[in-house]
Length: 313
Length: 313
Picture: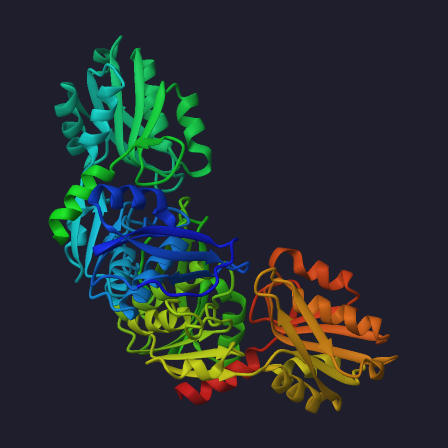
């Protein structure tokens, strides 16, 4: 059912497919949403979206949604705007009769504060998940979240997908020769192992510390001389201000690695941090399209579509 | 109870008072919040707030709140950020034991979309109020909202205060001679009458229309010749892109008004619209401190404190 009404041609119309299930591609993830819809063969759902001059978001659904809706909307920066758009769309869909909403949030904001590290801290992840649930989201699907285990404590049924293998496959297809996959942080080894399996490379854990006062990042990789004359893939879940990634690239280049590929799932690249990474000596930067940016050349839509299909069918 | 932990000196600490009741001054309204606390004689509640480089908000309450908390946080632009901060703080306070949260939201965002004007539209006001309620806000107090009647339909107990008289008193105190108070739009007459009572002036309604396609504003004031050689106060609830206000000022100046004072409750002044209003011929711009800006010289804290005192005592 399509209803009438004039649409100002200046207002951006995001049109998606409609079927037994509907898919809505929110403004934060319109391109990825369309790709997923195509991969899933879903019916089109027309959505009109605009931002008023004062900054408020406006949504109008041009058709009645099916009872099950897949709502695709990332919460990369500007996080608060994208998050509120997600909540507005979800409640709008509920109001129009949707009875089950599966939110695909490729990048999940506010996930790092997953507990009170100090007394009195507001646990933002808990707040975000609560808001999603209370605005009618039944199930959350997200990609490589900061702490998958922390999602389980909310009342929202949640699923996380790791796309490290898809990223590594893309590296392989480009003919980039990789002997080692280096990854920083606690969860790093998981990502490094996943990528290494695809590339037939050796996974290496890098230690990283952030000085709590200065914010300065230090990184350390054991047995540096093995990288000499070798191709190295560095993989991280998020590149934000790029401190860890650029330090690691520099260290590997100093260790005479022949090629260093700076890869991440979610590329936020705050404040021109991509330039910092290139200046540190990276031969290339590569990211997935969970967050729109100029390095987002690894398309995860097929993988996500497969997962969503098993979930909603 | 104050708890320990190091605070990075770069992180902004907003400190407020504490008593039988606590008051929290959120980052969007820290100055107004402090004034209200002072006027109410409330106990101080320490709040640490920062924004991470990627744009996410962080909150830590440095003390345990009393069971009743007044939470002061406007939702002027950037609306989504300020709104999310409100929800984060409210849930944080609940988690720390607050059992009754009264939110003073001086400027209420997303209030214009108070119903579905066209089929399929998301009613943003309803979403916003629902999110407030679900994040633990029991009562909402706001100042000159777009449509006071629309607030009543949410599950949140809500109160609206009109500060038009306070604004007019300030005009009077400045010795600005005003014969007419002109106000545009449907609710205009209420504001004009309130201000006129204080100033001993005559209220005048102005008609205004916005072309739905071009966004162009047209205004009309009856019997223009009466303004010749007279002082005129123009009053509006919100000045956003300033289209209506600048058109009205121009019209009154063309009608040979000797002085035109452009006054508003909430001054958003999007995209340098204050300059447009001055270029249209306004002799002064004056706003209340519901929204921080350089024209916000009318302090409403005493009035709001009186109202809050009757509510929570």
